[in-house]
Image 1 (cartoon, rainbow, N blue to C red):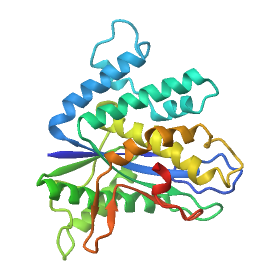
Image 2: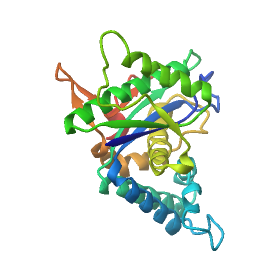
Image 3: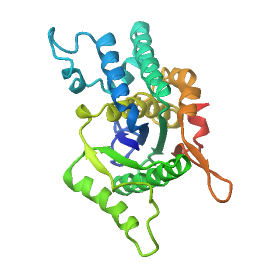
Image 4: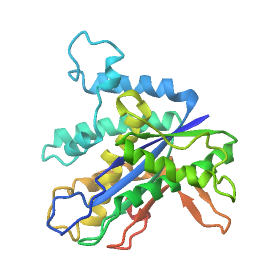
Amino acid sequence: MHICYLDESGCTGMLPAVNSPIQPVFVLGGVILDQQSIRAVTGALLALKQRFFPNLLAAGALYHDWMAAEIKGADIRKKARSSSRNERRFAYTVIDAALKILETHKARIVARVYVKPVGAAFNGAAVYTSTVQAVYATFQEFLSAIHSIGLVIADSRTKGKNAIVSHSVFTQRFKAAGDPYPALAEVPTFGHSDNHAGLQMTDFICSALLYPIAAQVCCAGHMTDITHISEHYDNLRTRYGERVQNLQFRYRDGDGHWRGGITLVDPVNKLSAKALLS
């Protein structure tokens, strides 16, 4: 069995102007892990926290307490743009270690990155829902290729938002034409990141890598507010672009076109996902 952990970075609100401090991109991504590797991934993540953030908990804290002591990708992102070279180096060290965990345990990544149009509507609820459905389609292809079954666990938001997303997949699964996701055991279920190493690893990918890279690549040219952009984010693409590309799960559809992996929806620049990682 394989589990796809889903998390987001950025808000689902519209971007009113180029001088707005509102987040100009939205990322929803998933990390796919073999169920048999979850214990090892969890142990590796706790070791990462203890090694690089030894003061995160008080002396004498129980081993299991390190699970709930989260390291947020947004905090690593902040260090990656710092004017301090030492802080940037620290961020790179932590990201290197996190990616190594995913590579060691043969994780796969699927994500969709949205660049918000300036001053135009951005239906965050629809974007979130359609992306979850796209993740389901990619995850189905992954599971079919390796003859496995799967489950999706998304980072919980609110009951109402969670229910809308689950119901959207439910209606697809029980339509008259048949279930498009036969390898998926259930509609999305929701968890809290302080209980799931997979959700915390997904946060690393979305918040510490995909979000800042996308913000810099796709928004530096038109945003006058620089809250979410930094020339230092170019270093993240240079250092980690190839490694993240290699973690993607992509497949060819019936027409021979590549699908899945990390996709980019960019109505402002019309860039493709290739611009993010190469």
